[in-house]
Length: 67
Image (tube, rainbow, N blue to C red):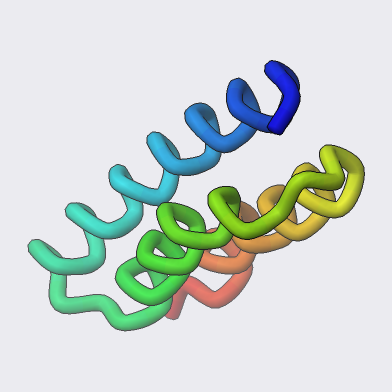
């Protein structure tokens, strides 16, 4: 892994942790699942463009699917 992928992984995993805690406390499945995926996904992706694109989409999904 290069430094950019590690840094992006740290940023998006931190956002995922926030979504995970929020979804767990509020009993909301969308932020909970998005948080889990954001915490795990960056460890398996080395391409920074794909990592950034998918992580940004996963970060926006809980905002779009609020009910």
